[in-house]
Image (cartoon, rainbow, N blue to C red):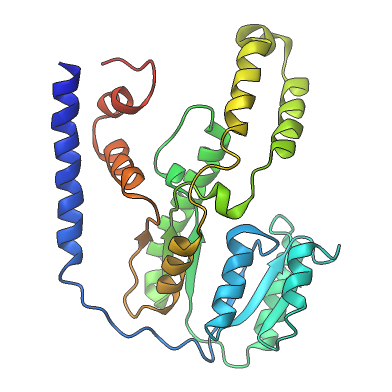
Length: 278
């Protein structure tokens, strides 16, 4: 019974995928807007997507304002961008959690751009901003929040002609190197030491250790090439008619995302989550 139901659902998911592809067919490729004379402010340029994107868009002709958390500490990412010695690569100290540093960065950009034009807002979340996964509650909450904020902002900005676009990648941990075993150990120690006696007794050290090992198994997981993400962000910035949302991911994850977000919750969980029953 389960295999038959799974087959029907798989066929349904395949139908959704086919419909998606058919909807894409009428779209004709349009010439990208020129990058010359355009500027982009990027946060998180110390490493990962932000660092790679800063270099990618600079190479395409953009003037890049690269916000780095560790610029004042001469961090590796900020130093590499500064060493490009380009007038179009401007590295800024910016902790996005600091209102003062964000305001200073915005003021610098405003003063540098003599004739600012209508722009676009491109936010990066994750596929886990649309669907959830066990033991990822904190991560999912943050990504769902950014997705909701972006959706609201998109509707609010129509009146000013500003496009707000969301990028929802799958797993690119191997490409970004943002997750390390040492970092997981530090977080695990902080979580366990900060847990109440009740939580420790309910879950147990064996369960906790097992999940720490699971997290470490993700260190080298996912795609090793960021080009899917970088290409979608570039299109979001340069296309005359960008999509509202891009999903740079493998076909498996795209189908799973559709299943998890469109099928009844009980069925989606039964298909993908160990221990779930109908």
